[in-house]
Length: 610
Picture: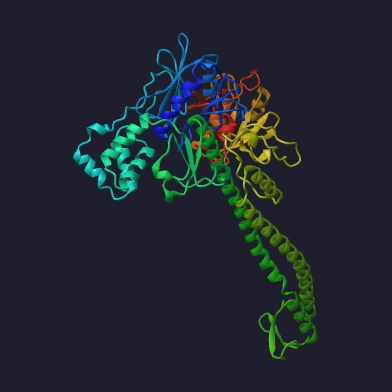
């Protein structure tokens, strides 16, 4: 999020939301936090920690709520609910926003809107961190005093001398100059840097243009607008970089005649952001779903083509039926023909009469060899018919997949993609794509009816189940035994979770193999098993991290930020005599520090995994 936009937006948010009561806090997906405010229409203060474009804005109306809130959302809800917003302000030199609540001992919500380092903190009145969202190395952890990121180390424009201005002005092009301004001038943002570079490229003095634009950034009245290559309602693909931007006022380099960008004006920056960010998120999610669905169809068609090649080879073999029938006729027509080294030389009565050699079994008579060739011809005839029919069906399925892939490429919205995905499932395509709209999608779009699973009712409308068919979603799991649910780790290992004491007993002492890995969080909770068919000495890092996150989430420590999870191989467990269901004794174990993560976030689609 551009620093210029964020600072202007935070001023408007403070004016609009000051005094509002915080009703709820939701974690939506892996990257989004929604603070529900007690105002008419219940607006949401929405924070996205997307790695490449974190952002903060107020969105009207409701959103798709998650089935299980993550620990940070639960902690924020507990500490902030019922309190009133006293102020919203940018702090420090970077993109850090502080939301202060009124009342004695009131906590603060701090959101760091920094690309690739976005994070959130709930800080108590004493300045200590009570909850952390998206912990980062080098940033405060739970129980530590909160310190904002380092102040802007770039020199202010007033301290730059002639040598510095000369070095900046010698940049080879406008892009290089913009990068130099971003690195070398305090308070600079990408929008400002590009505006200054464009003015300098048009002949303006670099120092004067820089000072004027910084002054304009601080003093110019807000005239919010969104720049796009087409009207907002007509956008179907994410525009190229620099072609879809939110700005607090008019920017000359974006409104120049050569840019050919559409300008959509808004009454406030809050309204512009509420239109811009959900639309951008929808476009990106739609493009990712279209790309992944198209790739799934391409892979399915490639597999069918390989099968078709094998079938074509079978059909070629079946084409020898007529040859075998002729050989049988020739062997019967010349019963006394001499044999040489496992073959018989006979004149070709079907050709020019020249001698040909026919392979035969020396242990059999000429008549028996002829009958063998007749039998082969009959089998080839039958096989040829079956192979030709199979080839026809394969060719038809490949044509269907290719046609479907073209329709996917032209699909206009997530509803069309879901419908096409159902057609792909009908063609037995293994779909990996599970997200059809972004968590920020407009509610009226996201509430479209979900397609039915094969042989079952429509899946419930939850944020964790946005697939065209519920079994596709890895987050929903797969029941393998009463009370035991299976998930698939990101690197392909099966993870089993017991959801009751009886299920824990069944999983650990009946289903698990001696070399499988067993996990359990501190306190009462689920037994978790990572299948280990290759008998590895230790689980893979990804499967251990994901299984430990499940063990922590399905435990009494779910609300904690970090949980100790013990793991070992099943062969190091034993059931105590007379022990309760699910009780075990560990002969040896190791400990893994895990963050509780619900399945719908842990096994989110690749286009949104961070």
